[in-house]
Length: 133
Length: 133
DNA sequence: AATAAAATAGTAATCGTTATTGTTATTAGA
DNA sequence: TCTAATAACAATAACGATTACTATTTTATT
Image (cartoon, rainbow over the protein chains, first blue to last red):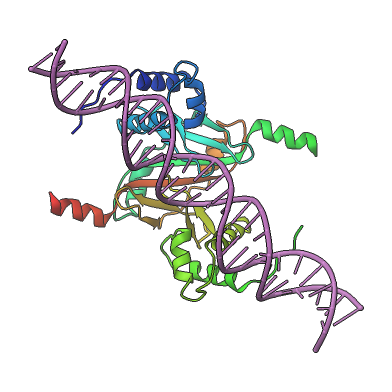
C-alpha cells in the first residue's frame, strides 16, 4: 500500500522511452538519460522501469538472448529479433488476440496473455553476409 | 571444425532430460544428475546443454522470468508459464507454422522461426488463491 | 516550517552463465 | 596394444545483468 510519489527521474525515464522507437536495454537508456541527469544511478533506472512495467505503462521484452529490453508501446504487437546482431524490430501486423482463447482449450490454467517473438536474420545482416561470401 | 567426442556425462544429461516431461533448469538437472555423477560440474551441464541445443537435439526455453529451461521435445509446440509459481507446461496444441509466413509479409528480415509463450495462473495456484481468499 | 514517507545515488551483493586452467578420458593411428 | 593428439572434464574464477542495502535528499502532508 505505499503511495507513489513523483520523481523527475522517473518522468524522464518514461519520456525518454516513449520518444524512441527502438527497444533499448536498461543500460542503453541509462547512458542516454545521463545526458540530462549526469548523476542518475543505474539502479534508479531499473527500479523505475520495473515500476512502470508493473503499472502497465511500458512493456518488458525478454527476447531469449541478451539483456531485457523495454518498449514504450503497450499495444498488443509482435517483435522480430535478429539472431546475428540482436536488433529488435516491431512487426506492424495485428496481434492474434484470439490465440489466448485457442490455447485456453488445451490448458488447465487460466491464460491471460501471450508473447510471440519471430527469429531470423535482419536485412542489414543478410547484406553483410552476402558481401563477405 | 572440432570433432565431437563421446562423453558419459553428456549422454547422461541428455537421457535425464529426455526422461522427464517437466522443463528443468540447468541447476535442477545438475542436482538430479549428481545422483549418478557426484563429481559432475555445473559448467559441464551448461556446456553440454548448449552443445545439444546447437545440435538441435534439445530446446532452450526463455520464458521471460527466471533462469532458462530445457526441453527434450524438439517438435514445434508452445508452452504455458504460470506467473505465480513459474511452472512451465506443454500445451498439447499444434504450433502455427504458417505464422512465420504471415509475419514475413511485415518484416524486411528473413524469419525462420518463432516462439510463443502463454502466460497466466496455473490450476494449482488458482486453487491456492481461492482458498486464502 | 516541521514531519513522514518515498525516491535517490552510490555501492555491495546476488544470480545465472560463461571462461579459464590443469587434469582425465576418448579416439585414431602406429 | 601402445602412443599421441585432442576433446571433455572438474574446479574455480570471472562476467554481465539485475537487485538489495544504506545513508541522504525529495516530495507530499500537516
